[in-house]
Amino acid sequence: MNSQIKRRRLGKTGLSVSELSFGAMNLRKLSSFDEAYKIVNYVLDQGVNFIDTARAYKGEIAPGVVLESEMVVGNTIRQRTDLDEPIVIVTKGHAYTVPDLERELQISRDTLGVEGKGNLKIGQNDIKLIYFIHGINEERWQTAKQSGALERLQALKAEGVVNFIGFSSHYANAKEIKEAVDTGIFDVVELPYNVFNRILGEDGEINLLEYINKKNMGLINMKAFDGNGMVPIYNVLREIIDIDYEAMLRFCLSNPYITTVDAGAINKEQYDLDIKTALGRRFDQGELVALKAEADKVSKHMKNICRECMHCLEKFECPNKLDFPKVLSVYSRYMISDKLGKDTSKFVDQYSKLELNGEDCLECGGCVPWCEYKLNIPEMLKEAHKVLGK
Ligand code: SF4
Ligand code: SF4
Image 1 (tube, protein in one colour):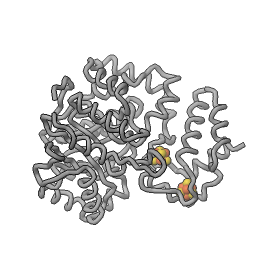
Image 2 (cartoon, protein in one colour):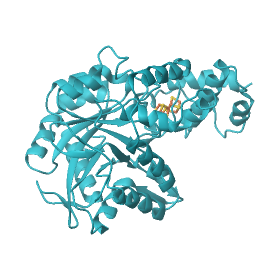
Image 3 (cartoon, protein in one colour):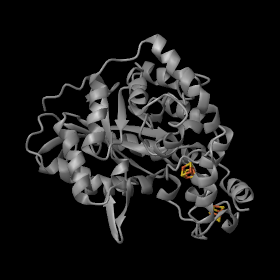
Image 4 (cartoon, helix red, strand yellow):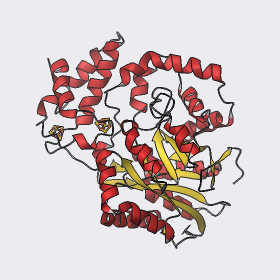
């Protein structure tokens, strides 16, 4: 496709990918397949050649109707007759043992409609498939190391079942991220980073973004500006600080260690703004310093809050059917607003209307390992009820 979006080299894969990519997670927020196909087609129309999806990126868009992002991505690519370069697809599995890895990967390939070995295709179109271990944390990383999954993953790459391998992780797992990078087996990493949270970058013990870049690995940036986990919080923050989505995206695009920034747009208008930003200028050092100072006015209040990222519910359901992210999101918004001296009455009202609330938590702890931000969920639910359940 004739694209103006700049390409960057995806580390040792040697692939040349658009510096603005498309994150398919938010497709599950749409209300029809038609809207989902429209946005993925629009992304491809713009010459974007990198799509980030996962087995877990699916959701019920209407009663009994499940939208799987892998299926939408695969079907869209299959129907195109105008693609003149391979589309690079990342998909991920919550698979940390050999049997889980083999099963999840097979389902992902089937759902995407990938055929062949080595030279992979979807329909008539060449693709490059990068398979990720999804969401490495302490426990999952231990399991993956001990179960033989890492060796099997490398073998699947050697057999051409996938073209490259990688992993994703989150803010709280710097130690495991470094250890995984140091194995030398992975080609690509996906990490969250944005102007409000630079802990995996320049604010960390080591700058992992720089470290990964020096290791010649590709780096995908998630949660840069509109991924899950930023959208709900940003709605609270934007009343307080002078940073818009455009500035957040430009901030990440200005980072030289990042290969591609994931955009989670769900319609043409949103993606048009992303493209306009990607085609625009980058921040200079002075602007970056000023932007960070503005972000730091609020970033200290963003610790230990629920981001409504919904990662916990991808593989887990509370035994008491408590929608705990919902409860925590009301509580987190209340807490941020309270700390910043803003009106909190609407959050008190929202809490009073919840069908089940913090008081309905059985404190079984089952949800805790599934939180990407390592929140003490039962403790927070108790606190939420103490503060909001009056
Ligand atoms: S600790 Fe509470 S919210 Fe978490 S799974 Fe148990 S009952 Fe549900
Ligand atoms: S509880 Fe944790 S994983 Fe679940 S939505 Fe909140 S921040 Fe995300």
